[in-house]
Length: 277
Image: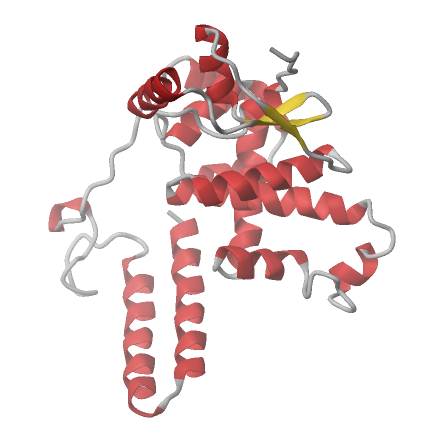
């Protein structure tokens, strides 16, 4: 077998496969061999960590292919784009990887003296738009969402620098942490992330389970006049009332472009409310 370098940042970039999926992959490789080549960059494994682990464990032969990149950030962008397209990810995981993609792409552009000023000013941009706008088109979200994702990614990465295990727990869903907490971490000192990481490692954070809201959950499900309304309830119903009014008008007399604009506008407003939770 060729000598392969394992880079911890690349290995920890994506959440581990769950036990059932890993077992299926292992069984498939034992029965059929490892048909998909592992991908290397300068001898460093950048795609196929699970396959490599299984092949080494069972002495299964595998093939490799080499790819060329100008920098680690170029590798990060490739890994994220490849894996996000390949895996079925949760919304939170997608937010993290979109944010990582944004930050890495900005650094890649920052080393490209020919384009960096033009790209970020939106003029003569070889990527047809600023970084956030371009990635928003790629991932089918708004530029504002991409910039918010960068805050999430920055905070989780800070936690990961303190404890890779804590970061993996967050990304796997075994630990629940709010976007509000992540934003505070991103705006605060580095030791804040280290404190959160230590608490996760000590088991102080428990897995969160989403539940459907009911009248007893503090969210007014029957309208803004309900009792015990969540603090965001009034803002939420105000947004939805405006959305209903605009949609009735546009479905009657508007075209598709108008509908798209309204949908995007209200999606951004709902994302803003979500960030406040």
